[in-house]
Amino acid sequence: MKRIATIQDISCFGKCSLTVALPIISAMGVEACVVPTAVLSTHTMFSGYTFRDLTDDMPLIMKHWQQEGFRFDALYTGYLGSERQLSIVSDYFSAFGTDGGVILVDPVMGDNGRLYSGFNESFARSMGRLCSSADIIVPNLTEAAFMLGEDYVGEGYDEAYIRELLKRLTGLGARTAVLTGVSFKKGSIGVMSYDSESGEYFHYSHEKVSKSYHGTGDIFASTVVGALMNGLDLPRALTVAADYTAACIRITAEDPDGIDYSVYFESLIPQLLKMLGRQ
Ligand code: PXL
Image 1 (spheres, rainbow, N blue to C red):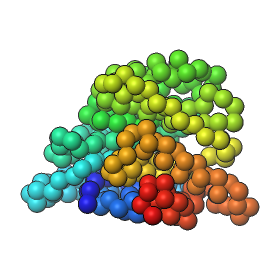
Image 2 (cartoon, rainbow, N blue to C red):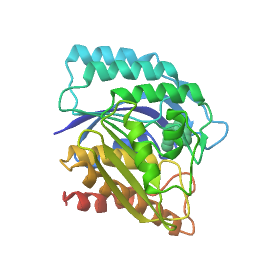
Image 3 (cartoon, rainbow, N blue to C red):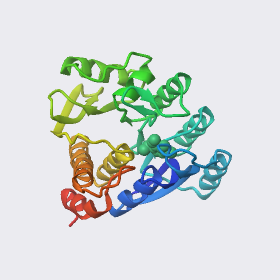
């Protein structure tokens, strides 16, 4: 069985980060080990959330895992809360990044042209440096702009602009960059990737649902990791992850009593496994 380690926070309420990564990756038949970076009562869309910083535990967990000789087929990072955490994560990459293993960094920092509360431009630059140790990075357009220190362009761009942006993102050092939330046509949205070694681009889009929700980036990234561990190549993994995430958004938006703090991802797990050919 493949084994991955994922490093991100636990938001006790809100369906994001570890509380979506664990069930999705496990359901995909992959062992998911966790390094919780912080415990929050909710994700940061709510006001008044508690925040227990676990940064001091991170090197201790790493040291113990090294003593035990644990190995991982992939390392996957999501929401990270401080420059110190970025530096410790870089130590994890040195300790557990192996030949043939995959390091995927989702540089969770913002959306719609703005950084989430608690982040600033200096953090974004440091996240850009962490991306140099990754194999695959999966920013949205906001995160890409902040990591590159460029102006955010949220609409009115063409494919040539996205191709160029992807090239600059791989210039941060990762072999492959994936941009999420890319739209070339009204009513559709998707992902585009660039593999700097083969020079190949891949684009996949689907119908856009007008509502957006927290946690969907984490659902997408977790599914990409799980799909890669199931032997899918990157274009196929991106397609499955985009379709699953879009379906989760759709069923939530279509429910008149639908939640607004995240999406219903649980009931579609059987569909995800069918897409993988596991059921
Ligand atoms: O979904 C990304 C995420 C993860 N963790 C926390 C967050 C967010 C997005 O806002 O607040 C704590």
